[in-house]
Image (cartoon, rainbow over all chains, first blue to last red; front, side, top):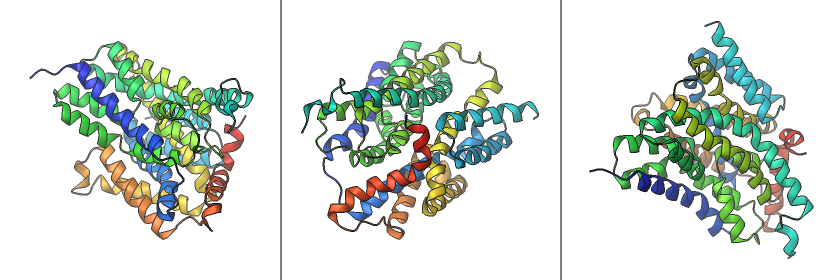
Amino acid sequence: MTQNVYIYIFIMAAVTYAIRVLPLTLIRKPIENQFIQSFLYYVPYVTLAVMTFPAIIHATQSPISGAIALIIGILVAWFGFDLFKVAITCCATVFIIEMFL
Amino acid sequence: MNKQEYSIHSEENQSAFRVGVKNGIPIGLGYLAVSFSLGIAAKTAGLTPIQGFVVSLFCMASAGEYVGFLSIAAGAAYIEIAISTLIANARYLLMSTAMSQRMKPELSIKHRLLMAFGITDELFGIAIARPGYLNPYYSYGAFLTSSIPWALGTSLGIIAGNLLPLRLVSAFSVALYGMFLAVIIPPARKDKIIAGLVVLSFAANYASTYLPFMKDMTDGTRTIILTVVISAVAAILFPKQTANKNTNKQSIVTQNCDSSATNKKEIQP
């Protein structure tokens, strides 16, 4: 059976948008429940942490350069540098380390 | 309720838009690198550069698009691509819910419909790190400068495939993770519970890639399961203090101000 690529694209876009738009439009009141409040407070940190490691060491050509970029990135972010500086520092770290590998 | 409050002609909204545009640029640069590699997957699925551009503009999700491209390449059933897109993107449901708690309750449906397009991990991260109610114009600005490189990168990946030196691709590919770190580490420095959760999340995800049942899951599925479990346990063990109904909203805003204090000096103009 041959599938239509535009129907695939439409399904992907519709499902993705529905996930993003439903809570934003349907939840109009502050959630009073303390558990849900606390849960939502922790979600962004946990999800970003989960997505960072170990993915970062598989993203590079060598796991060593990825691991060093992770450590340097944590240090640079720890001292309060902004998004762009942390990102560029990680890229430069990988680039330099991989010249010697 | 002042009608002017959400007008593009208001000085405050224009300035929020400009800050958004500025904050979106580094994210856009990171996106360009990531979507370039996504474009290589799209090419395998047989997509044209224009189709890749459209998918990335309307979906704007790395893991979600990636599973989509894999499904298209495999000639999957329509229901299958719908379910895998749903699972890979389920975390946005949580992010959207978290954002709904930081919107001015009177904010119109029009702004809510538009803001929903820009809920990605990074755009969510920088929006939620700002103190007080979310300004839609900040989100529009950040969406503008990050979505275009994202879509463009996908097209370039389809066109240029393997032209870029491997070492350069390798270096670019960590930009995204650097951005994640910039969002989670400053609050972790201020709040020991968040610091503990970050370490636990790293360890749990690493361990799960070796666990018999979880190792066969896609990254997207693992992310959602671990996020729900770890955040729920943390919410039970370390509930955020809320004195009474009237101060609830206030305390959330204050917590977010505190936790983003280190970011603030950079993110704010």
